[in-house]
Length: 365
Image 1 (spheres, one colour):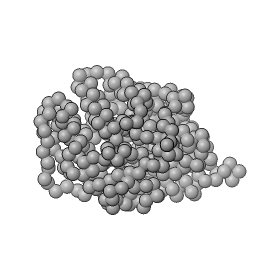
Image 2 (tube, one colour):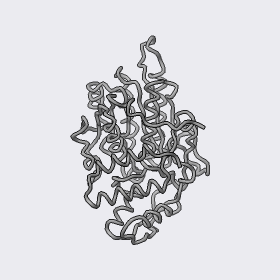
Image 3 (cartoon, one colour):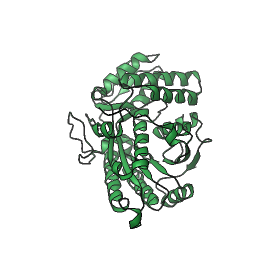
Image 4 (cartoon, helix red, strand yellow):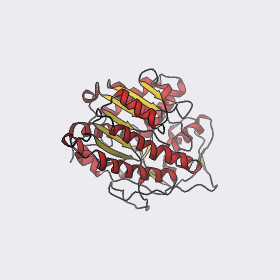
């Protein structure tokens, strides 16, 4: 059995890390974690996409070297990377909503695909970068609604524009890696290790995005209303946001220290028992949250979304020593505690840092 690895604060201390999408939900949690380990962080993203915003609640704007800019702006991105000279790049910036991609398909492809190409090309010109992790999604796979999990070598695909754009990102990462990052110093090519990371449905405190299940539940319960759900029987690989973030951090370290042996695609998902239907999540959350008013099902026609999706994470467990630390019930409980603290007016930076510490101390279930 693989040894469970932990995120090493000693390794990350003083590292120069460039984070795209730092003002988003996952980017804010990641930036806080990096700051807690004394990294030198430059963030690059648009203004926070929601109000309230986790980025503002965690007071990150004043603590990191944050640039408000668009990943589609090739010149601005290249300049930001060149000026900062990062050692590690974590690319999270994206249009990350399936339903939004039906409304704005062109912008989705521009942001997700060409934004990533701009990043990779800027890295190609930056000799300081030793490790790059490009974050995509479990939805990048050609989903055949199998009952088993997808492995990293399965075909890319995507029914909707969001999923399709992320499948394209994976192909672009592979092309850039083989074309520009496989050489050696003797060949005059950048010695940079580039990997992609595919995560499942990420949940956690501080997510206010529209058309996402947990934020919809929290908003409804806060208003004392019944929760409206669209696809009660859809099964997703739910996981707390700290789970894949820990995987990204472990992967970045191995890329930095050991190089191209880890320059590949990686899945980060929950154990099989935590791939649960939407209805199960709603019932659990309603039981945990004060002011429960139950739920109702929206019978209106909905855009296509996969009914069943699961990841095989054997590679990450065996080769990186990564495993989920929190069960799905642990994750939901942490969200409830975070939300109640926010409703009481607590310092959410302190609350979030405490959850990061709790996560790091916890074991597998």
